[in-house]
Length: 116
Length: 107
Image (cartoon, each protein chain N blue to C red):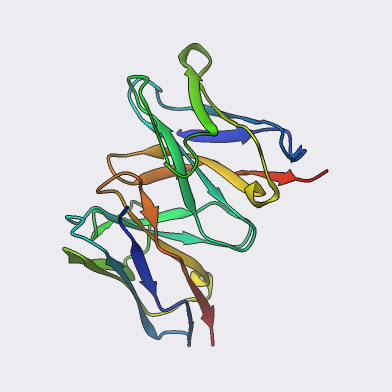
């Protein structure tokens, strides 16, 4: 069955770099796009960027200068790296599968706190 | 960017009541609209895609409609398990954008 699971450090210091991994199963990264979405505590959802099935990437322009998405298809993993973290980057980070314009499966999310 | 204006921000409904949530796009999104339910501490769950297609396993009391810039989600007969926050998502143009959410509670 289709599954996605995010993993990461939990706590990141201000100005440091966040590195997250999305490990997928039940589908191929060479057939589906995978996106990252984040949610500050008590707030709404924000699209961050995507890894296309062919390896191309797209980013939210508000984050583009700080964000990088990559993958390792042999390990079924998609990676997110975002630098210069600030306190307002605190939140839950999700990876999700794209079904041509909507997201059908989501990971459980990983909480990231930016604090010294 | 396409702005998604979602209303109302919150809603309280009695058991069995029919409720509606609206999303208005700042431009035509050609029915590329999905609805999600999010319960506290959980990831969003897909309810409706392409404006009116019911996701497998979602109860038939959920329905979606609309076209162009105006879309709505209807719950026909509120159930206790329907409490949560509902979001719309436009998938027509990048960057993909979500509505601000509607918090639905039992009255």
